[in-house]
Amino acid sequence: MNFKQMTKTSRDNLGTIAMLVVAFAVVQALRAGGFVNSHMDGMLVPLCVYATMAVSLNLVVGILGELSLGHAGFMCVGAFSSAFFSKCFEQSMGTFPRFLIAILIGGLVAGVLGFLIGIPVLRLNGDYLAIVTLAFGEIIKNLVNVLYVGRDAAGLHISMRDQAALGLAEDGEMIINGPQGITGTPFNSTFTVGFVILLVSTIVVLNLVNSREGRAIMSIRDNRIAAGSLGIPVTRYKMFAFTLSAVIAGCAGALYAHNLSSLIATPARFGYNMSILFLVFVVLGGIGSTRGAIIAAIILTLLPEVLRFMADYRMLIYAVVLIVMMIVNWNPKSRAFIKAHSPKKWFGRGKEDR
Image (cartoon, rainbow, N blue to C red; front, side, top):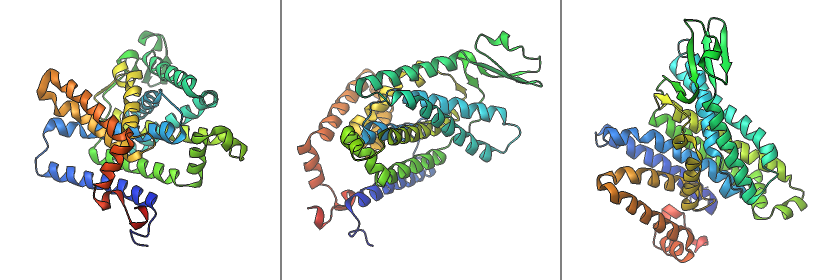
């Protein structure tokens, strides 16, 4: 089957994957040529983290059709669980296998928590679901801030009071120190690893959307009552999408944790403002569009840094860009005009699409 014989959906998915691969190749070429300064090079891993979080949240908001404001909490769980594992096995395992297992643990722990939270939460809809997920995200962050974990020859010591309550021996080591978080996490995150996590997450979500399960999930989004009347197990598919989204967010959190020397559960990193930022990526990228969510995450993350030389005016330009993106993405005439005047290969337009 050649490119023209593929369905429009398949061509769009292939275009999204090709876009990521080309962007990765271009950035690597620029880095090899010395055209990327140290500041922008340090932004590459956060870009992958935020783009992966946009893909994760788009699965819930855009494809499932439920408003979740607690995804920063799943990212927090993935970050701390993976960093905890890396700290415990830093001396006893090789770098690559330990980092790989840490990413898997971050995704698994976040997925289990997402499943447990989804049991009561997904019985709600609309604003009620958003409020409860927001509350769970804040609860997770606050629980991490009162958690003290240490290790000595006797094993692990856990307390939710203070460091003195642990009863550590003199040679003991603090791993999680309450509001001070985890320090000394191995610095293993790289742009290549971040790209692989983003690419795998994107492929998984795109394949899900085009599968039988994905069509069932989108039917629930369009009309939950009608989907249930047709025999679709609404609760099971909602739980599946929510849990998978939490797994992806946990993997992004693991990548984020291994890019910091000190991991602290502050409101700026894992608070509700961060969840709102992820929601902005999804909305401005076009709700339900995985490609749009990735592009919006990259643009809105890079823009404040690129415009930093403009001091106070950079946020004004940032606001203007937000407005322009909203008009372009949500105005049917604007989208039709852009599509009509764009290269055929980018949008995969064949004769059957005209």
